[in-house]
Image (cartoon, rainbow, N blue to C red):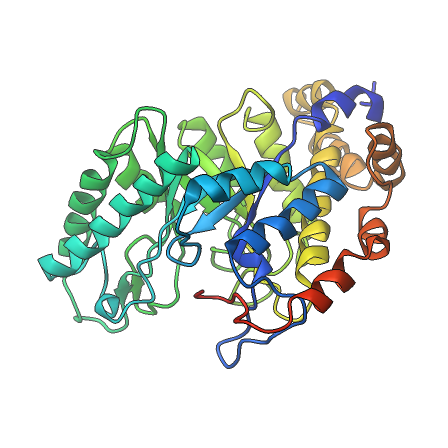
Amino acid sequence: MATAFGDIAGLLAEQAIELPSWAFGNSGTRFKVFGSAGTPRDPFEKIADAAQVHRHTGLAPSVALHIPWDLVDSYADLRRHAEDNGVALGTINSNTFQDDDYKLGSLAHRDEAVRRKAIDHHFRCIDVMNETGSRDLKIWLADGTNYPGQDDLRGRQDRLAASLAEIYARIGAEQRLVLEYKFFEPAFYHTDVPDWGTAYSQVAALGERAVVCLDTGHHAPGTNIEFIVMQLLRLGKLGSFDFNSRFYADDDLIVGAADPFQLFRILFEVVRGGGYGAGSDVAFMLDQCHNIEKKIPGQIRSVLNVQEMTARALLVDGEALRAAQADGDVLGANGILMDAFYTDVRPALAAWREGRGLPADPMAAYAASGYQEKIETERVGGVQAGWGA
């Protein structure tokens, strides 16, 4: 018997997708950062904008911070501001890719003084976590080389392992170190954490509270990302997602924009592997830069895309699928997945939202709210927040 939408309504209520503070600032291409009206001028305004996404969707109860982009005098004040706006402060992201000292690396650098600077930066991030009540310290490294022979590859792995161990020793008993990987850029010959296997090997050596972040845009073309999801879940090391899309090489476009079917397949493996819901430790987060579109509607669209594909993944008839697989029914098994993927869940989700006191159409509701016009009028003057600030 096929799964009905009513059977999954309760599960949908367990979904939470963390928003990145930097998605609300100005961003752009390698050639230019584009300004836009209404852009936040400080972390407090970023939080206020993020709260609009949660207010209209009910899906985004927390906001990730990036240090030093989101440095403030008082994180107690920022935490209260977030709570007053109906959201919480979430993951703390470190930054060791914008200082001149890190040109040749940070945690994997040959120079002990540079490594010490990078480690101390992470210690400061942990201090911020203690003030914000955050669970996760997320580390993405630009470390790598551009040319064969530029540096010793094994030596860099050894130095990275030692640096991570020192950081891991500092995190609290209820906190986690989350290591992200990216197969290239800005390093082009090799990246020190290029794939899930390298990330897994590094965190496995640290301990139980060290896990992997899977950014859906950080893979070579043709990579079976859902296989990686399955494997990390199987190994107990999938800590979080950074959801976004890419078409060619770079990433950070709206999640589901490039390949909705891939997003569905990923979420099916998440659901099947126990990575979804209130009982799971796997964190869902967006990691996006809205270069030419308005920031708040871009984030609303993103969380709705994740919700829609999650609903379709939950609609897969697991019992029928397992039976078809056991019988070796290749086309039957594939058909069960495709039936769920092609189900138009949008009307049911609209009704589900209304039943929870949310707008049936969050995009239209935000457009009609007047908030965009308000911030474009009020936030004139001062320095707009942007990528790197």
